[in-house]
Length: 65
Image (tube, rainbow, N blue to C red):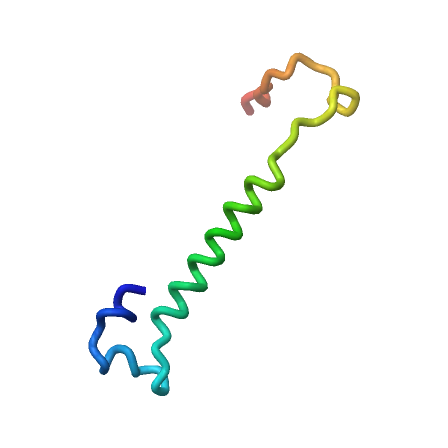
C-alpha cells in the first residue's frame, strides 16, 4: 500500500494505467479485519458434558510394534 502512495509513476501504472497497490492493500486490510471480527463473534465453545465420552481424558499411546 505504501508503494502505491509514494512509488514512482512507472511502478504505479504497470497494470494498464491502474494503480493496483493501494487497492490490493485495502483488500488485504478488509479481509484481515473480517477475520478478526469472525474470530471474536464466533468463539469456540466446549462440548456439552452430555456428549463427552467416557474416560480419563488422558491421551493414550498405541502399543509399540
